[in-house]
Amino acid sequence: HDKLHARLGAADDATFTAAAFELILGTTPTKEERAASLEALAELRAALKGAPDATKRARTQLVQALINHNDFVTVR
Image (cartoon, rainbow, N blue to C red; front, top):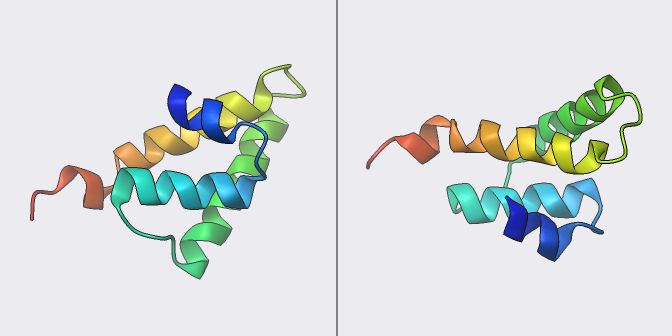
């Protein structure tokens, strides 16, 4: 996640989400996955109540969720 954040830290959430999906799952997110990811990032950021590293922490949570995604952990 640190390399992804270093490369895309200033990018908007949609760009970060697309890059995370491509890097971790090897695919682009569907429209539904993108919407769910963007909603989750907004909710996580709000839950962090303006912490100085709220964006980085929210994106870390998204990356962790993708690592736990069935498409990542399943050998095909």
